[in-house]
Image (tube, rainbow, N blue to C red; front, top):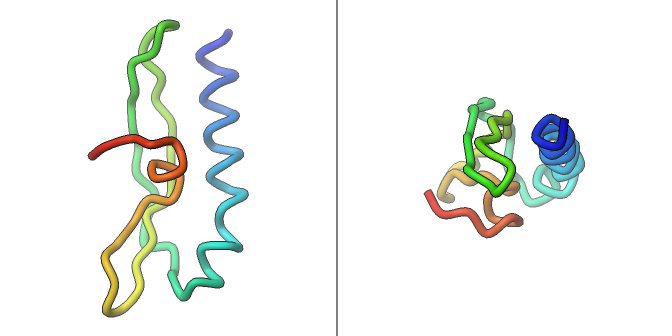
Amino acid sequence: LIRELIKLALEEVDAGLVEETKKQGYQIEKRNKRSVVTDFGEISYWRRRYACPGKKAQYPLDKLMGYDK
């Protein structure tokens, strides 16, 4: 239950970053699945990848959470 709640929370935060990221000139390129291992076990969730001409593609949720590649 806790893993599912964390998954839903991460996906909700990701959705909340859409407007802010688009204001920076980025567009949603695709959605990818990511898995992280926590004290509660492995959690898999979907997050958005953004691209902008002339800039490096990014995953704002990963940056916010401090996740490495």
